[in-house]
Length: 241
Image (cartoon, rainbow, N blue to C red; front, side, top):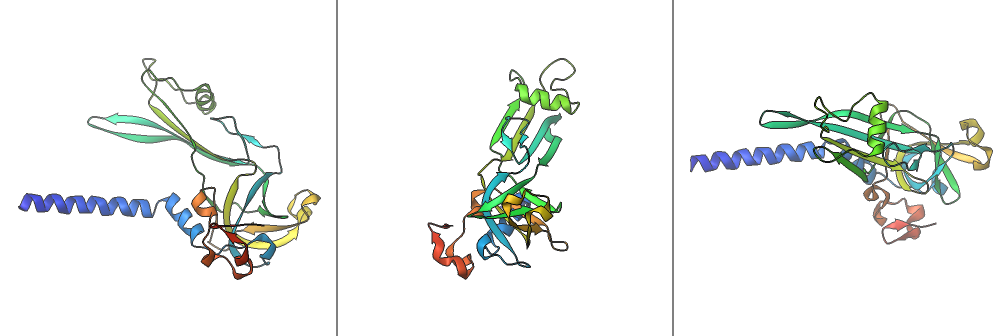
């Protein structure tokens, strides 16, 4: 009976630890921040307010090329890890954790917003995943990208290293959610083409970062949490023009 009790307590402790790790993970914290924040349409966003917007990505600069998939994008995040065995256990060590972006705007209806701050916390859905290892060669893009970082995909005896690679991107017209402080400014003042007219500049406020994600959970919103001026535009959990 005592042994059973110890096992139950130990299992409960593990469950609590795993729950806390998930709850305070970067992904969970960013999604929670976005989902719990007020959603505003750009057409009703006033200078000085801090809220969440949802819109579609529009390239301003020449788009980036995502290193693992070759997709055109305004932002990509790549995570590459290597499995290392230590006796009876193994761990995944990070080889590359890289996020890059070019200049882009967020379109909502006929209005635009622009992120103009480096204090950014983002969670990009990793929709491209690759593995390499014994009898499983890395893709040409994996090999080329790792080579550019000075990393070899094979070990001492020429066998493939056990690698796992994940990539997430923001593509043209992809819907994203962004939370931050907004101020309306002329496009030229922000270094953007004049055709955008007045643009909502999104910045961090004090120690509060900008939050960004393309996870569908963060771009949808229940009617009760949308600012009253746009409640009549809600349909099926999303808002319309």
